[in-house]
Length: 199
Length: 170
Image (tube, rainbow over all chains, first blue to last red; front, side, top):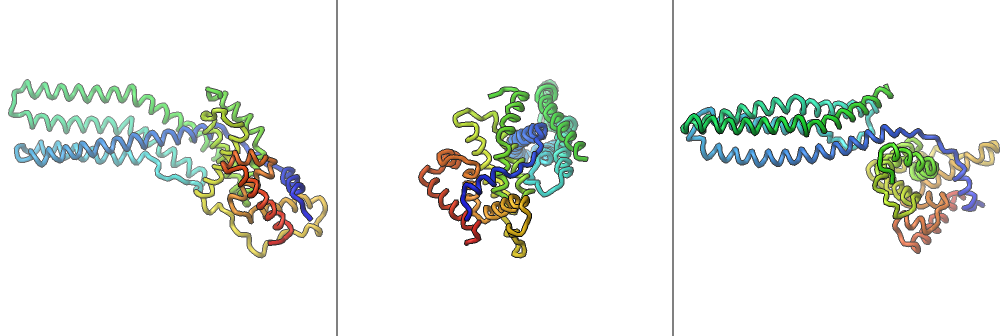
């Protein structure tokens, strides 16, 4: 006859394996999850912004395209394409896979490292290309729609646009992106250390 | 609660040192397969680490840890259906305790107990693991959120079922 007390004693006397605790892995994983949440929020806001801007651009195009020549069409098409391409590239940095327990550790880490490297490239390279191309599209648009006005009017519009784009790009590069790049670099370092520990 | 990362690591170390055996046994009670139990153990430690900043001290540290362990186990099973209990093939026989050397008797008994626990429903496995950890009815009710009366009734029913399984009764 078995009594419960015996079972309890037997249960409590069982050997417990000394599982290792890797704090660094927890810290990195926690940071990664927070970073992913931030990225998702920012991508959603950006996509909503692009949808609104795209709707306005479409409305402008269909309302005024008869009044202007090809630079007008070209600048609007470029801005539209740039927004779509940029949104697709930004979402490419987001990790949609939620449960990755089935894949090997190295494969899992390679995926995170790949996503982070892509994010870094987006911030340091593609953001600039996007800004320059968007600026050129805006220059084409401004020149075309102000051609009936004075030269001074055109130059003023160009100067304001240039100053705005330059200010936003510089603020992004030296303030906003600095923090983002630091987070990405920390995460990359953590994941790469973990990967070298497994390899 | 410790503010900086280093203090948090120290605090986390202390918590794990004091509770790792209980957490590990809960995992073993909840998941029969040892490799899945190891995964769950790591997941629970990760969740404790993540939640350490939010611990306000409203409940006992041990209650807080057990709550995280229980909730993680529930979530782990619902996220990973394949980790749920898999029936053991009929060919698998529990060793006959009387036919093996005495020194292996304890391990064989334990294996039988693990097997019998694995026959219980998922939520019963959680409760019995807390009972086996010598938690009081009141603590178990606090951890699970059930009423004290219901917890008592339920524990008695689970104990009875477990003892029947150990006696090879259905």
